Length: 441
Image (cartoon, rainbow, N blue to C red; front, top):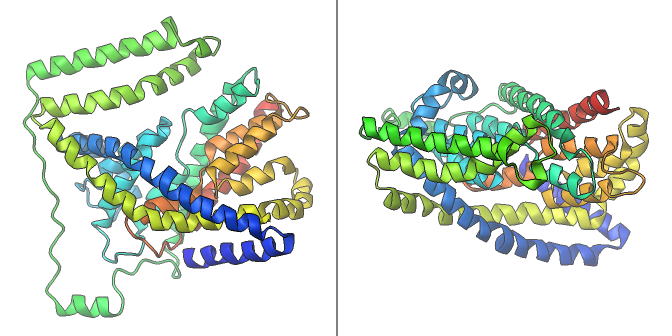
């Protein structure tokens, strides 16, 4: 499906750009985006990935990932029945989901790429997305957000008196979208046109001619158990961060958080201490379990370079197609055509450019959001601004996510992944508008 979508993006952009007289801008934007994809996205991503893949390695070697996966095994079995119960992919997916919930985008992506790499180990048809991969990406696209920090910051800068009012609406929208994405991915994988055939053609013949495939060998990690004094250290460490939480949430919150409700200050305090906690807890826990933390961190970080190298071609291909659509004026044209229909169903036409841009470009959507909330006739505290903030905080750049995640494991046949992701985005938009009308109208 991605082959046809990518080709359609290119051809539509060229035709519309030619008719609008924007071929020059489109050509210039294409080469700028190709440079940006490599120099400003892929290369900086290496450093961020090195940090979090190193931390992930420590979590794996210390046995902590297995503990997390075992705690959530009943849920994971239902979501990912094709993944063995003791496979490390479970733990990587759990850590990615947790990072997304806390709004730690710089941590969530490397952890998600690690999960995709582990899921690829189970793939009998390299290059074809498995059911587990698609379900995981559906969850990622509609990841539950506890704190839509970027949307809150934009509203605050625009002068909103209550920029955090969108927190409950964004949580509700992402929860409903996440469930929808999972249900759609599970439904579509059963249809004949999307069914995953483990082997076809020569693959089937080769399998039949050979002996039965050897079962997947999963490395069994058994670090030494914690001693009593180890537990004392961990308890003291936990108490220190509990004190930090109380301090930043209630006793001495940052100046920008003082006027916010107590419940929201608590969520913001969690977001503030989450990264320092993760960066210190995993090495400490691993060291107490007898892991050589520096060596293992470096081994894990080393994977970042190979992953980034695999991502670049897929990233360039998708981003240049999206930039061509933007420069050609396709989004503006669709907005003009669809506005009468949206007015008839009472969907604010002002939100349409943002909605159309969101699956394609995060920076483009952010620019549209900033422009919208700063219009004098709208205002940062208006119902429309809160709808826009909820949409921005509860949706994802679906095509970018698919390009990066599938590109990391060289998946070319994405099956129904795009439909599942776009369904989650669509549901998030509908719920965002509906819940904002109920709460703020």
